Length: 115
Image (cartoon, rainbow, N blue to C red; front, side):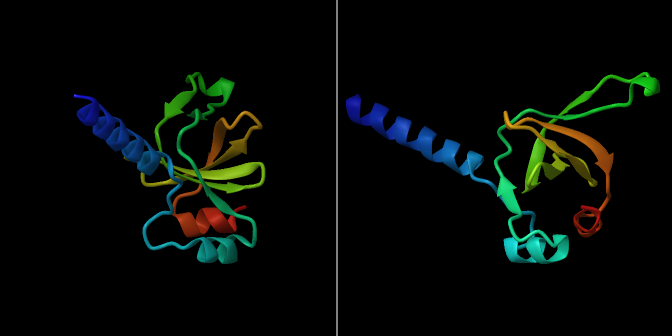
């Protein structure tokens, strides 16, 4: 029983690591992201953080909690691709790791040029 538990714990840790390792969008390298954005320090960020789309108060809509698929960091700005969404969102990256998105930029190349 001890060996089974150890194996199970190892599998869970391995699965958790895969899920928390920052990923790049398919077809993109970090080098290409840095070239298109003009930011030599751009990086893929972990999706394990609070991400929301902030609505303008006058719109009469509440902020929306997002489930990120990819997050790319550019200093205190970031680009977020939410699960089941086509567009990339621009937002602010806060010291606590949370993200407030406030702009919609369509395709990733367009969003990178909009930084």
